[in-house]
Image: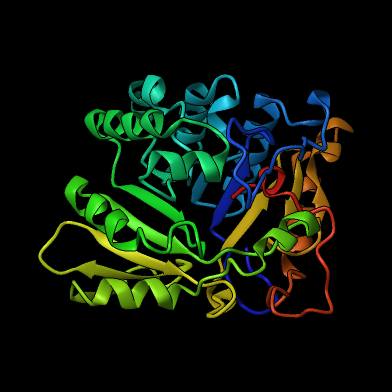
Length: 326
C-alpha cells in the first residue's frame, strides 16, 4: 500500500481509548475531557477486525496507544488476536507506565514485542507538576516489572520542556544506561489551541539535548531503521541508545510509513492532517471487507506530502492527542 509520493505504509498506530489516568499539561491538562461517548469508541472486536483488514493491505507493525491503552479492557487478549493475523510481525505499545506492573506478565505472555514508556522526569515533585498525579513510583515499578517479564527493549519517551526537565537530560540518560533502556527526547509539538498557549516559552530543540549528551558520551549513528522518526545513536560503551525526535526542527515526513487509527475509528494518514476515513461507520453499516479496503487504499494514496506544523497559517482544530494516539 503506497501513497502518490511512493512511500510504502507498513506501520499502524492504534489508539485504544481516548482517556488517560494522568493529566500532563502539554497533552491533557485538567478540564480537557474526552470528546467521545463510550458507544462512539471502537469495541475490542471492531479494533481487531480493522487491524486484520490493514494486515491484508500490508501493515506489518502495530502500535497500541491511547490515551492510556491499559485503561481499555482486554488488552492482552487483543494482542493475542493481532499476533495471529498473517503479515503482522510486531506488536508494540506506548504507555505512561502507571498500570504496567500488574499487566507486565500478561502482556509478555500475549506476545507483546516491545514497549515505550512516557517518562519526562525522575523527580517526584516534578512528576506531580507535569502530570498532575503522584505516580512516579508506579511508573518506575512498572518498568522494572516489564524488564523482569522479558519485554524489551524498553524505550523511554521524554518530552523536552524548558523550565521543567531541561536540567534532567543527563539524569534521564544515566537512568536509561543503568537499566539498559533506550531513551528518546521529543520536541514538544503544538496541538490543541489551549495547549499551544501553554507551550510558549517551553519549547526546546532536540539539538539542545543532543549537545548535552555528547558532552559526556560518544554517540554512534544507528541507521538501521530509515523510517524511524528519531535520529538514533548507540551510546558507546553501553547497552543503551539515545534518539532525538524533531518534528519541528528536522521534519521526517519524507520517510514516514505510518497511519493512525483513532479511538473512534477515524483513520488519519498524517498525525497533524485531517481525518481521512471513518472506518467505524463503514463497519457498522455492514460494508464488505473489500469495500473498506478500497476506501483505505484511496485515502492512503492521497495522503499529504508533509505535515503543516511549521505553517502558521494552518491552525489546529480540535486536535486532542489522547484521541488521536501518541
